[in-house]
Amino acid sequence: MTAGPAHPHPAADQGTAGLLTVLAGMLLTTLALMTVAAATDVGMAAARARTAADAAALAAAGTSPLAGGEGGPRPAAALLAEANGARLVGCCSAAAEGRTLDVEVVVGVAPRLAMVRARTGLVRARAAASVRPDGEAVDPAVLALLGGDLLDRPAADAGRLHRPVHGHVSSGYGPRVHPVSGRRRRHTGADFAAPSGTPVVAADAGLVTSARWRGGYGKTVTIDHGDGLATLYAHQSDLVAAPGTRVHRGQVIGAVGCTGVCTGPHLHFEVHRAGRPVDPLPYLR
Amino acid sequence: MLLPGIVLLLTLVLHAGLVGLDLVVAQGLAREAARTAAVDSDEAVRQALDAAAGRRPVELRVDPPAARRQPGETVTVRLRVRSRAFAAFGAHVWLPAEATMRVEHR
Image 1 (tube, each protein chain N blue to C red):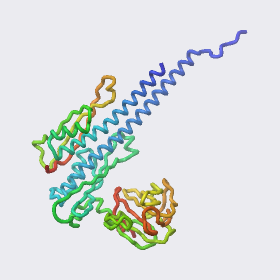
Image 2 (cartoon, chains in turn orange, red; image 1 turned 90 degrees about the horizontal axis):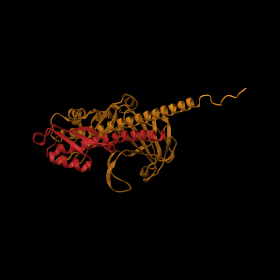
Image 3 (cartoon, rainbow over the protein chains, first blue to last red; image 1 turned 120 degrees about the horizontal axis):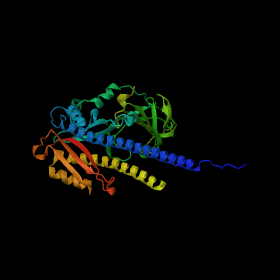
Image 4 (cartoon, each protein chain N blue to C red; image 1 turned 180 degrees about the vertical axis):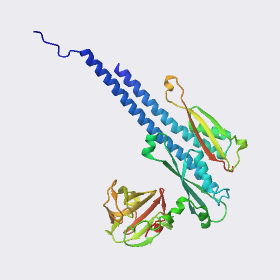
């Protein structure tokens, strides 16, 4: 009686192991190349979107009534966005400061890879261009003439948001002398005076994108409501909402305080449309 | 046998990444060149491009040329940038990019 070998086919085992190693290597390489391709696709879409947004914003500003251009800003912006492989998503939000008119556009570029496109949708970019004509301050009528998606939104969304706190408006949106610095600058939100500890509630349902200390804003919560609309709640004494969680309309997210740069307890409330602060009051009920 | 294979695959992935990076760089250069073309001469475009591209070889075409550019019309810059990817192996990969801007008053 003779004992058999422990491994009847050692050469075959080695061959199988080698094959598996090669297959694993090929799989890992394929995954790595797919990751690189996806990252490149998104990066390229973002770069093309930036180019298109710049071109569209410059065209919109250059054809605005203030610049005396022909054809109007929206068609010009759409043409330039398309020429750069993008789609005009928003045009032409405008803001005037003295003699300068800022015209803003938003464009989107679809990534080329279907897999990436399905995950990211349009990669967007926003850009603004200024017109500074000689002469008088920008006439509000010029802003009205510009028209456009972003300008129309406040009317469409009027009353969409819940009042974030019980209290009177102590300072509105727009140019003002800063109570601490003494400098004249634009106030990017509305202040609601209320006793410290008064509950602050979400103006609408959405995703809490951050809840943290933010420099002069103090303890701050930001909420993304989708459709390009976001809100910000600053100077709070306490933060209840956690980043990454969803909140419903009217849900308590914190408490009024005086953290950051402030002179007394109040809520600084901002509404952002397409990433840019707008006057919050028309949005409130 | 295994180590050279791993090195080869890693090199492939690295150079694919370089291609991706250079594509984004090329797009940025095209934007810069188109912005210059919208307000200045073809020579200024070339200078701006050379300043932005550094030592990367770039082929440039501006359409229409400066003499025929009219305010309010569009100008398109098409360029090709030679990527750093695979250069070590003697291969030259040229990456295209283009950007269009509205011609402004000079």
